[in-house]
Length: 369
Ligand SMILES: CC(=O)SCCNC(=O)CCNC(=O)[C@H](O)C(C)(C)COP(=O)(O)OP(=O)(O)OC[C@H]1O[C@@H](n2cnc3c(N)ncnc32)[C@H](O)[C@@H]1OP(=O)(O)O
Ligand SMILES: O=C([O-])CC(=O)C(=O)O
Image (cartoon, rainbow, N blue to C red; front, side, top):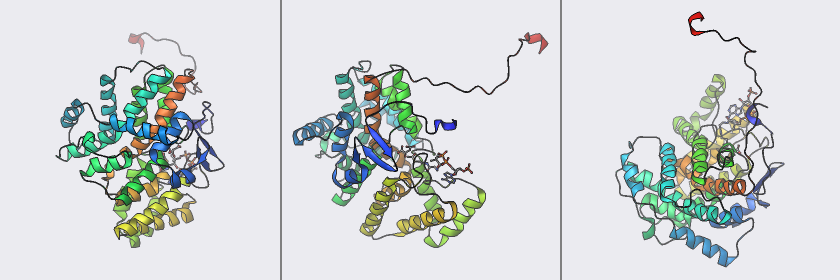
């Protein structure tokens, strides 16, 4: 089957998508987006159940204590060209972190969970440091910031000042919504990598490299580029007609699994509306709603998670080329859950290819060719 569509590649207890309903460990995404913090979701994904207040407090403390980066990572970031691709920078940083972890090759349950905390705790600080160093500013040390919310930590480290509660709440909801999605391409890549008994960091590097593509996580940046290009709600129809006539992809629409709509897009649409009102600037929201209406009417396609998240991140003031990195911060929780599940019950992932090439050939010596 081309693209492995509908092929079951493993058993998993982490996430289900059935009849268009997305659940993490049995909890519907709408309920989690309404009630759960990102840290509760991390616990749920890693340990299979919701934490009690002591367990949640302990996880938050662990994450806060592990958020500081090895100082040499800042030197590494200063070596990068400022204009270099931000996801490539993140990928290299994750690889670099390997060299500061003395449990890399210990795949036991306990060591995997300790590494998961260390990696999860540092993602926000790395992404913020990428932005600050490339724009000539000093990175903020996470140890100087008093918060136990990764959403708040990220926005604070990025801007260098305490974010507003409405922004923190929106960021937290985005982190919950993007945390996990069954065997999407980047999670599958992570599982394939660690199924060879390779390490957690290698799995993360594979996952980040896979999320980077425009058909997957980078679609959110492409959506923002499209809305920037459109610029005004009056220009939406001409733009969409042109796109359809060209036969090009309309980014942020369509999905391999959801054919009747992505439930996360519905939550993000509402969040985008709220943030537009908060910012007192609904231009991006209005453009997005019009794009979605026309793409549905003229192509029969519905928005996926990357469509309205681009609007939300724009209202949160996040630079456009960091959108996929923000997705990666959140999805790290899901990648790590799958890496641990793969390590716990491992069998090498090695499918077969259907050979469609030439038949058996006869060797010709070089001089006779
Ligand atoms: C977090 C995420 O990864 S969510 C996905 C993010 N990616 C995007 O938004 C990129 C745009 N979307 C796409 O490219 C696709 O919809 C994918 C990659 C997400 C899914 O791909 P597939 O499962 O292979 O698509 P599917 O089989 O449903 O496509 C059916 C038809 O709709 C078309 N189609 C699907 N999505 C789009 C789109 N966004 N724009 C235009 N046409 C599309 C396909 O080209 C195909 O047409 P055809 O039958 O004439 O060849
Ligand atoms: O599941 C997929 O194919 C892509 C997706 O929506 C995600 O990774 O969140």
